[in-house]
Length: 185
Image (tube, rainbow, N blue to C red; front, side, top):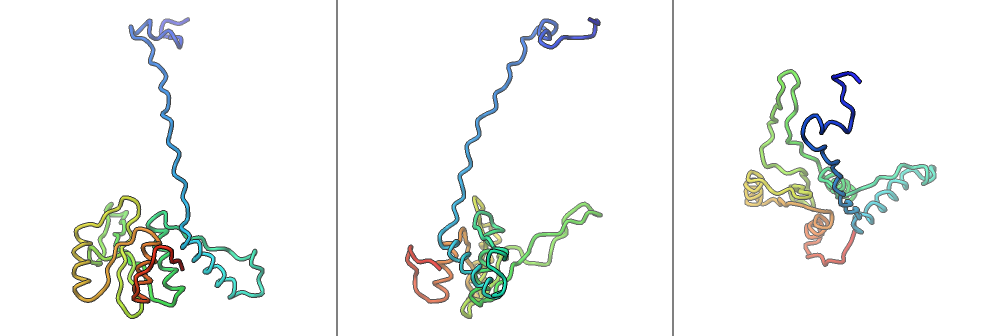
């Protein structure tokens, strides 16, 4: 054995320290399984059936199915916009994030006003702004300020956390009645 060669397991004899114990990885908690809300599953089924009706000569099993979720903010936004358009209302996603400029190495801000909601819609003749808040996301001060101004001007500006919450708001705006907990699509 060469003088500069150390055999594995004999290191502690040369360093004067005992060998480090192998760390056991912590057991990860299993992630809570996502369960699609019944109202969202019902809308997804109706959406796919309407899509299949547009192509009567193509077998249904050959058509691509659309899947909706309210697990993330992007997925919930897409589901809400699809629901509004499915029912004949106007809805558009509002992008207020900056664009990364590689040449400068920074984000260029947009001309959009801070605090504007994620979805701009017209529901039953009312101007509606929907800000999507998923998970632990909370309203920012500029969003609360815009909400107060929008409401003072006669519009509807709401924070939406899941599809059921949106559906309750949708029913209130379209029928004027307060929905019950067991109502769906």
